Image (cartoon, rainbow, N blue to C red; front, side, top):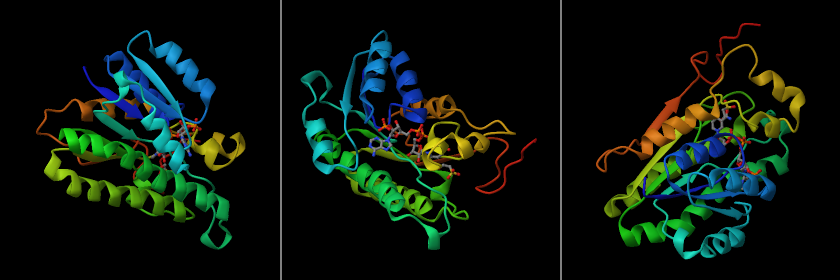
Length: 250
Ligand code: NDP
Ligand code: 8X3
């Protein structure tokens, strides 16, 4: 496919799987994350399939976001597809025990970081009157679960921003949609629980979604006809009925 995609959070999980899926279809890639060595390894691997450029920045750092996107070489400057995927949960605590640093990390990356990256790219899309923005929300953006408080709020905000973007960018013919997964087996729980000890149990006893499952869906979404926009998609593993009900064989 003769298009260029910028993927945030490409160093792991859903973003990384999407980078592979897109590369294999010949989509030119701009891969973003904070872990330089992982970006270097991805570039080495995926350059077999397509043109790859990497940008190392923290989505929480406003200036770093704009400087990185400004620095793109000419061959990578025109971005057709933006995958706003970078983000994580930090902690799982009742609100009265919540950690302020965890709250800052979630709101600053999942919400404000998504906004900064979008703000850096949307003007070129409006100027060209074309583009496709996919925000990775979550089932946590549709349903609040116990101790999910701030993470759920950040993902509800992603859904509100997705709707807001779709409305405001409608006159420009830009597609905007959200993909909202349930439990996906990535480094997500390792980050949320600050290590492997609890994280290892999260995906035990049932078949969780794999990052490649979400990458398949993202590729499907970006390959629909020009008049078709998948606006909002919720996907669970079969074992999961909602945010709190998961059928486990232990
Ligand atoms: P991973 O932890 O495996 O990947 C998270 C990615 O986001 C990494 O590439 C990480 O890169 C990047 N990232 C995180 N914070 C920042 C930051 N401040 N600046 C730049 N990059 C950042 O988790 P997932 O793949 O599961 O998560 C991807 C998205 O999917 C998130 O938005 C998450 O909320 C969402 N999601 C996940 C679900 C799950 O069950 N796993 C379910 C529903 C939604 P690096 O550390 O190199 O910066
Ligand atoms: C990640 C899924 O259920 O851990 O967004 O919040 S959940």
